[in-house]
Image 1 (cartoon, helix red, strand yellow):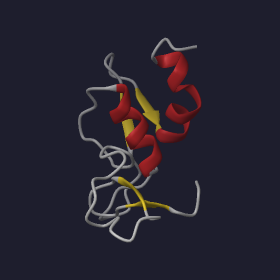
Image 2 (cartoon, one colour):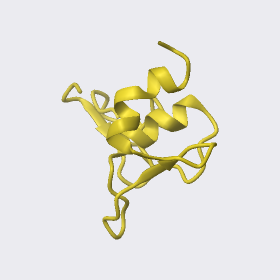
Image 3 (cartoon, helix red, strand yellow):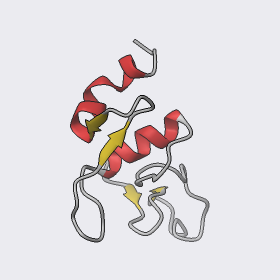
Length: 88
């Protein structure tokens, strides 16, 4: 990621800090990097993958529970999300 980009820790939004008023401007992407309890869109999947494999607070490892009941680690989801969503 480029050095002028900033991810908000509280909201997971992506900001461009090249402007002096970046903290008051609209974010570039509001759903960029955050864990989702329920995934409704592909953007939610990507944001959850970017947020990493550990929950905050607590540091518990995050797993994806698939529709058929299977459990998948975030690393496996990261490696195979294109196949899982029919994009590859």
